[in-house]
Length: 191
Image (cartoon, rainbow, N blue to C red; front, side, top):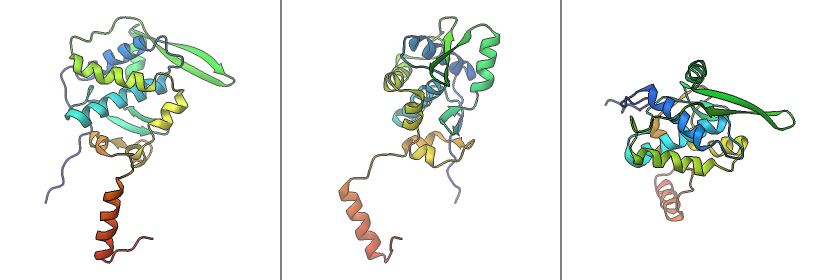
């Protein structure tokens, strides 16, 4: 029996340009956020992609994600952001908002080209992710992303889009009771 393949990267029209335009969009939308840096940018993109995949089977960017110590992030981010800075379409403003804590705030230097790749449906997932993380600190956003999908991986491991189906919610009590009864009838014991 062949094991089902997991989706780590999905080919969507525009490829990496989709991620580039969303970096600009999120940076522009978060310009007035109380706290916004690279960590929150990564979490917003991750949440939008994985929520979209969970709800409709198609992510927003289709780019590959990996587990990092501060949470999931697109694999393409470091080289893509460096390219965007070199092209003059993205900049970073450094600000110290606590002793020894420096935020690298991404600043869009041009308007994103959304209509080329995204319907309103795609952007709704991005806007919902922005709203979710809006008032969080980078540490709070990082903690929020450390759910079962993140815990199922090791640092630098790829994160399949199917991890979006894993739930951090406790199972309903009725299901727990059924599982206990099944385990008992099957002679299984917990440690």
